[in-house]
Image 1 (tube, rainbow, N blue to C red):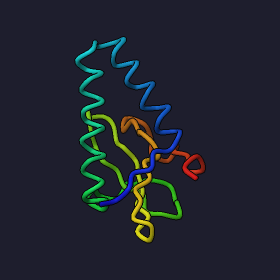
Image 2: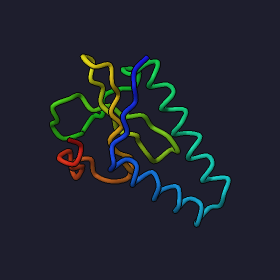
Image 3: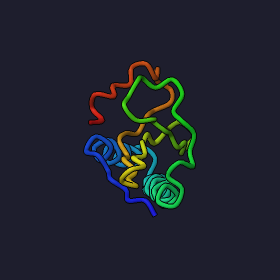
Image 4: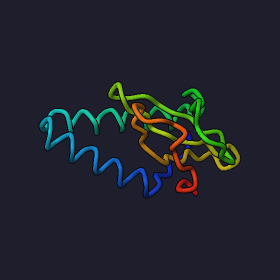
Length: 107
């Protein structure tokens, strides 16, 4: 089973999206966000390469992969095979242009 490492950028965005969901749509939606994200993390522990590559992402030293959730969002991660570690780096709003994604924040 792979280890999950959560980067600071992801933590900040997760917190902000959950707060926004709670304020705009209520407790049930915020709870659904948390549930969806936990389900993806549990899946990635068992199958770290189970989600497809993030097409359109800028060049990065590892292959970025994405797991879609809540229809308009993608959890961006990469898998370090040598250490058996999944690095969760970002939540991407798929309504935005992927070329604006800054991978320099992922290091």
